Length: 137
Image (spheres, helix red, strand yellow):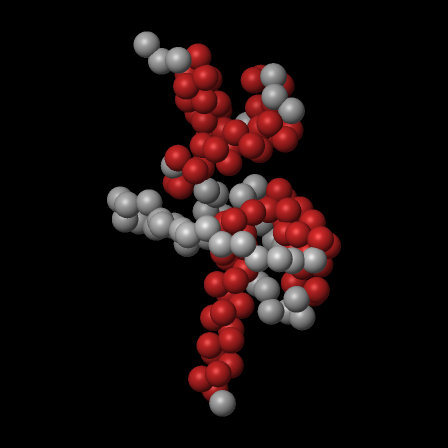
Protein backbone atom coordinates (compact mmCIF):
# COMPACT_ATOMS: atom_id res chain seq x y z
CA UNK A 1 0.00 0.00 0.00
CA UNK A 2 1.26 3.49 -0.87
CA UNK A 3 2.37 5.81 1.90
CA UNK A 4 0.00 8.73 2.61
CA UNK A 5 2.29 11.38 1.03
CA UNK A 6 2.87 9.25 -2.05
CA UNK A 7 -0.88 8.80 -2.45
CA UNK A 8 -1.45 12.52 -1.92
CA UNK A 9 1.23 13.37 -4.47
CA UNK A 10 -0.34 11.03 -7.02
CA UNK A 11 -3.78 12.59 -6.56
CA UNK A 12 -2.25 16.08 -6.56
CA UNK A 13 -0.46 15.35 -9.85
CA UNK A 14 -3.66 14.03 -11.44
CA UNK A 15 -5.58 17.16 -10.40
CA UNK A 16 -2.73 19.38 -11.58
CA UNK A 17 -2.69 17.68 -14.99
CA UNK A 18 -6.46 18.11 -15.24
CA UNK A 19 -5.87 21.85 -15.03
CA UNK A 20 -6.78 22.84 -11.47
CA UNK A 21 -5.33 26.25 -10.59
CA UNK A 22 -2.70 26.66 -7.87
CA UNK A 23 -5.32 28.22 -5.62
CA UNK A 24 -7.73 25.29 -6.11
CA UNK A 25 -4.94 22.77 -5.52
CA UNK A 26 -3.97 24.62 -2.34
CA UNK A 27 -7.53 24.53 -1.02
CA UNK A 28 -8.07 20.88 -1.90
CA UNK A 29 -4.78 19.68 -0.37
CA UNK A 30 -4.53 22.23 2.47
CA UNK A 31 -1.38 23.84 1.09
CA UNK A 32 -0.32 27.46 0.83
CA UNK A 33 0.37 28.87 -2.61
CA UNK A 34 4.09 28.48 -1.91
CA UNK A 35 3.48 24.90 -0.79
CA UNK A 36 1.69 24.12 -4.06
CA UNK A 37 4.55 25.55 -6.11
CA UNK A 38 7.15 23.72 -4.02
CA UNK A 39 5.31 20.41 -4.44
CA UNK A 40 5.08 21.00 -8.19
CA UNK A 41 8.82 21.64 -8.26
CA UNK A 42 9.55 18.41 -6.34
CA UNK A 43 7.28 16.42 -8.65
CA UNK A 44 8.97 17.94 -11.72
CA UNK A 45 12.36 16.93 -10.35
CA UNK A 46 11.15 13.33 -10.45
CA UNK A 47 9.32 13.61 -13.78
CA UNK A 48 10.51 16.24 -16.29
CA UNK A 49 7.46 15.62 -18.48
CA UNK A 50 5.48 17.75 -16.00
CA UNK A 51 7.03 20.95 -17.37
CA UNK A 52 4.47 22.93 -19.32
CA UNK A 53 5.13 22.84 -23.04
CA UNK A 54 3.44 26.14 -23.90
CA UNK A 55 4.65 29.37 -22.38
CA UNK A 56 2.51 32.49 -22.02
CA UNK A 57 3.55 35.92 -23.26
CA UNK A 58 6.37 37.55 -21.31
CA UNK A 59 5.33 38.78 -17.89
CA UNK A 60 6.22 42.18 -16.49
CA UNK A 61 9.09 40.66 -14.49
CA UNK A 62 10.46 38.78 -17.52
CA UNK A 63 10.40 42.02 -19.49
CA UNK A 64 12.32 43.75 -16.66
CA UNK A 65 14.97 41.02 -16.64
CA UNK A 66 15.30 41.16 -20.43
CA UNK A 67 15.61 44.95 -20.28
CA UNK A 68 18.14 44.82 -17.42
CA UNK A 69 20.28 42.41 -19.44
CA UNK A 70 20.29 44.78 -22.39
CA UNK A 71 18.00 42.55 -24.42
CA UNK A 72 20.41 39.62 -24.25
CA UNK A 73 17.95 37.40 -22.40
CA UNK A 74 15.09 35.86 -24.33
CA UNK A 75 12.74 33.41 -22.71
CA UNK A 76 11.82 30.28 -24.60
CA UNK A 77 10.01 27.09 -23.80
CA UNK A 78 12.25 24.51 -22.16
CA UNK A 79 13.64 21.90 -24.49
CA UNK A 80 12.10 18.59 -23.48
CA UNK A 81 14.54 15.73 -23.55
CA UNK A 82 12.88 12.82 -25.35
CA UNK A 83 15.48 10.29 -24.25
CA UNK A 84 14.86 7.93 -21.37
CA UNK A 85 17.82 9.13 -19.30
CA UNK A 86 17.36 12.20 -17.12
CA UNK A 87 19.49 15.27 -17.91
CA UNK A 88 22.72 15.54 -15.95
CA UNK A 89 23.59 18.88 -14.41
CA UNK A 90 26.58 19.87 -12.29
CA UNK A 91 26.33 22.20 -9.35
CA UNK A 92 28.16 25.54 -9.62
CA UNK A 93 28.19 28.66 -7.49
CA UNK A 94 28.13 32.17 -8.95
CA UNK A 95 27.82 35.45 -7.13
CA UNK A 96 25.14 37.85 -8.39
CA UNK A 97 23.72 41.17 -7.29
CA UNK A 98 20.80 40.71 -4.89
CA UNK A 99 18.46 42.57 -7.26
CA UNK A 100 19.23 40.14 -10.12
CA UNK A 101 18.68 37.19 -7.78
CA UNK A 102 15.33 38.63 -6.72
CA UNK A 103 14.25 39.10 -10.34
CA UNK A 104 15.34 35.58 -11.29
CA UNK A 105 13.30 34.17 -8.41
CA UNK A 106 10.26 36.22 -9.41
CA UNK A 107 10.49 35.11 -13.04
CA UNK A 108 10.93 31.48 -11.95
CA UNK A 109 7.86 31.74 -9.73
CA UNK A 110 5.87 33.46 -12.45
CA UNK A 111 6.80 30.78 -15.01
CA UNK A 112 6.39 27.95 -12.51
CA UNK A 113 10.02 26.83 -12.96
CA UNK A 114 12.75 26.15 -10.47
CA UNK A 115 15.47 28.81 -10.43
CA UNK A 116 18.16 26.44 -11.72
CA UNK A 117 16.15 25.64 -14.84
CA UNK A 118 15.56 29.33 -15.48
CA UNK A 119 19.24 30.22 -15.01
CA UNK A 120 20.24 27.38 -17.38
CA UNK A 121 17.80 28.74 -19.95
CA UNK A 122 19.07 32.33 -19.57
CA UNK A 123 22.74 31.34 -19.78
CA UNK A 124 22.23 29.00 -22.73
CA UNK A 125 20.50 31.76 -24.69
CA UNK A 126 23.18 34.32 -23.79
CA UNK A 127 26.05 31.97 -24.70
CA UNK A 128 24.35 31.13 -27.99
CA UNK A 129 24.12 34.83 -28.79
CA UNK A 130 27.79 35.36 -27.94
CA UNK A 131 28.81 32.51 -30.25
CA UNK A 132 26.65 33.97 -33.01
CA UNK A 133 28.31 37.39 -32.55
CA UNK A 134 31.83 35.93 -32.64
CA UNK A 135 31.15 33.93 -35.82
CA UNK A 136 29.86 37.04 -37.62
CA UNK A 137 33.06 39.00 -37.04
